[in-house]
Length: 501
Image (cartoon, rainbow, N blue to C red; front, side, top):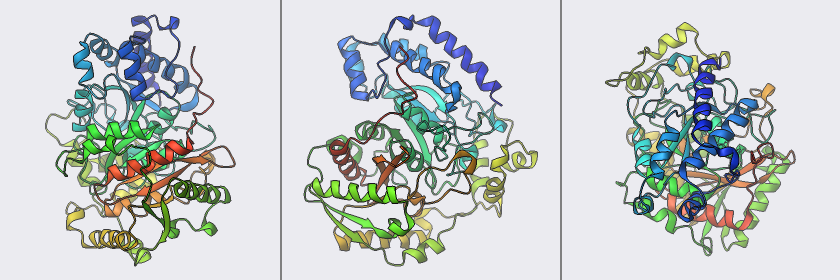
């Protein structure tokens, strides 16, 4: 199953090793931030090619040893890094993401690389151009390091299994799932195999894996970031966003990715990262998603400590209820648009792929066995007339009730644990899937939501605090999350991936 990837991967690592005698250099990548890298490069301590080579070496050392987070490396990454090294300082300073190595989920087009969506049926789906968000990142100086493994077709929030790579494990415990579907990105970034990553989120797939891997994951407001050039799952609910080790890096990424149309808010993301951002603010607690009777005791304890930390930072924390919440949940169903959306992606002019109808992939049986049930579910009753959020009265009513509750309580965000229990063991990925709060509101209402590390459970596994905001209020979420992060410092790297020298 990994043969196709392994061949390209071995070639890339050989190129990297021959291009730089990096064995004489120490590994400075551990928990490296965007600002930290740029300071090293500006001072002459490190070069761009050296940095990229180190990340490639870390992938070579650790991924094949059992993590299985990377699907294929970018054969052009090192050449792009060398080109960055030749740029004058003035041009470097003008690029906010200069030389930032990014791991991209394998459903996002990167020119010259296959976009497989975790499916061997798309192994020859070579992208002829970059998705708009990739083009924006490259213009800002970023370098695509590799594609990250993902749950096949992004079907599963439970685990990350593809027919291209197999199963990605949790970097903190190889016997546990990283959640899905962006589990490859999450485990790789957590293990410092890349500086930052991109994921997509239809139900939980940025925030769920980020929480499981002690990362910051932002699901932006629907419409803030373009989805062109991305293999869809449910296009009217899909979102693409950054997965990072710090809130600041997350804000730096989204500032480049975001459209400018919704009020030019992107420029405010970094301005929001100021000490004291929680003073005088009101945070709502949605007890419907944080019922101690439904939570594991350690997650309940961590969540109550997180609320105390928010209060200590100057926030007023109040319970909040959303009118008709259960009725909204009962009415909230996906419109079966998967086949139409994927086929529209496959039918774009110039796309090089032998697949033109995803139904044929299902009928061929060319998918991981664990994907069969969800494959059938997403194809059932296929339609091509599904309304988007703006034309869906039930979803708009749900959003209106959430915002009304926030307004009446005077809160700027709603808090709840990202998961109410720890990650399942891999051999019990189906039976022990529960407590997935990321699915509850944001995918239906289109609101932004961010998860930030809130500590580790009794098994030493990460847990996440999630914050839901008003539409296009990403800056406020960043301000809250950054101040919480600054005061708590819960993030710590998984111990199985030390510096390689």
